[in-house]
Image (cartoon, rainbow, N blue to C red; front, side):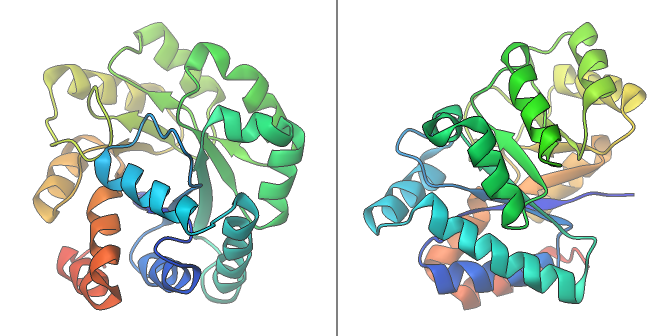
Length: 245
């Protein structure tokens, strides 16, 4: 069973457009990963980083993004309860008001899981424990640096899905599935009881096909953020051309 997701920057380019784009995307994908705009998005390439900065300049706050999550949660509850909402953010954003306060607020607004882009595996335990306490999935990363022992340990603890980073670098880079990544994916799928999903570099139908040869699913972000900037018509047309349904 495939588990495919899409990434959008929260409330970019504005709240109304974002919510409509998210609802449209949920007709095609199994889950949405919502990035909370952050001033130093180290894991993001230039397209997503620019969108994040523009959202901040427009006054987008974490609370405003979570209000949009509530709207999406209500839509999912009414139309397809299998769809999921994940928040992608950075450790500093979580530390700002305290881990428990942040995770409580996420859960309160219908979020099912959290992705912390700058937290390595060796520092993840305290976040994972507090996420579990608030009934949130803590999404672990598998990277080109992950050892087989680390992959086995991650697979034994992971919930939601496993986020496999397809390359060294930031989002929006060109996809290249190296033998190293193929081996990591094969290893993860051998030990994992949840979907092993590939992210970073997937911007076209052809790259989706490549990813699904090795992974249980994929996450697309940069290409969709570009299309939203062009307008909802362009965004919707692009989604329909991917032929995911």
